[in-house]
Length: 145
Image (cartoon, rainbow, N blue to C red; front, side):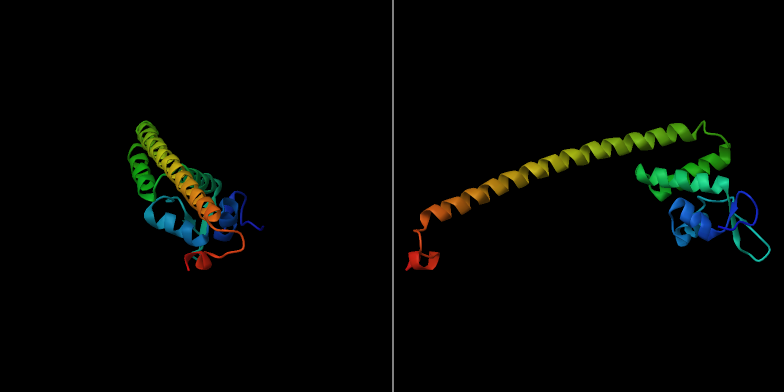
């Protein structure tokens, strides 16, 4: 990988480093999640190690369930305050909400699994019942005639 200067990356390089498409990176810049992007003389974007860290952090927040809107809100708070004093409590609140949502979803999935198992058992019982009612060598059609 050729870099113009140490610690700067072209969009293709940073895309590979953070495992995001170039389009996604441009979109993050457009919506204000990545605002420190510089451009060189010919208009090409130049990314720094800070941008790499930022994009990795955004990926982590996505894994934790934050929406882009929530990330943009946190970014706006940070730009106003320039410290984490207000962001961290807000991030904790969002993560608490996600944990509650996950607990609720796990409960729904456990209930669904129980319902599936009960339905499977009813179907197995029906199959067994139907099989024991048929005489060997006779089809269901012959039995009804």
